[in-house]
Length: 241
Ligand code: HEM
Image (cartoon, rainbow, N blue to C red; front, side, top):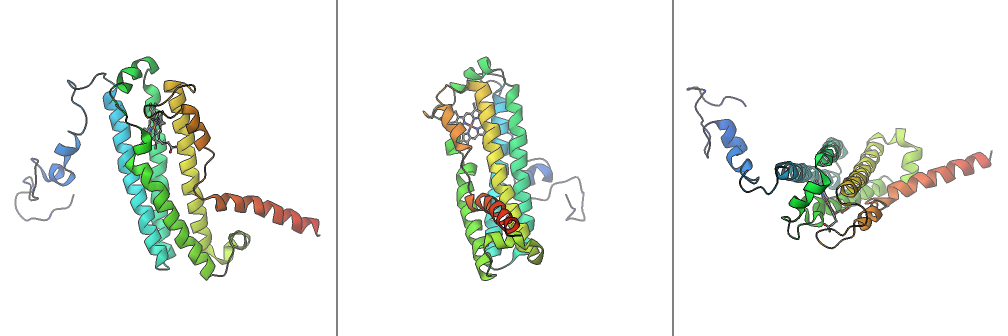
């Protein structure tokens, strides 16, 4: 953190709780009190479970904020800043996917002790994930508009990507964003299957098998359809030789 005073540098200058400016700025008191205390935990692994979920929510908050801001940039016709924001969002989803691995460290029998204190809590109510479809549709609409302004179909953009570098990079980052959501869903499904099995019904009544079916869902299907269309176009061109 940078120095903003000329006095004793060991003393805090920011307002708020905490003995140092580090604690005050990051509000570590509040942050570190958001997990159950050892006395409140029904099982030691509750800290692991809460840490993975809470940090996922933070990264998802960040990722969806960046996608939303990228949409604003695109709505104003600015592709370059949107590229940087989308890269960050994609990276955030990678973190969320990587850290879910930690839940494989829970013993499936012992996990049931945690499951019973979750009430009707379900990932369907994750604020972070609930925001994903909204920001994704907003950024897609803005991108689609830019494409139309350039007089291009998506297939044409992919056929002549080098002539429209920024638009091409945007299309690829949006593909990666969608791909990362897909990979997260797949990884989440396998972790749920390891913890609960595939024949079980979740805390909010959803059969685990439904999660398996959701893996096939795409947020931005046009990007994937375009790839199939490119195969047809390429083959048709070759057939015409
Ligand atoms: C052992 C770990 C986990 C188990 C056993 C588990 C279990 C489940 C189950 C059974 C569902 C279906 C809905 C229900 O009835 O509850 C679900 C959905 C969901 N969970 Fe988890 N979950 C785990 C970890 C996580 C983590 C770390 C996150 C990250 C925030 C998460 C986010 C979600 C989301 C977003 C859904 C909605 C599914 C979708 O839209 O594809 N879950 N989970």
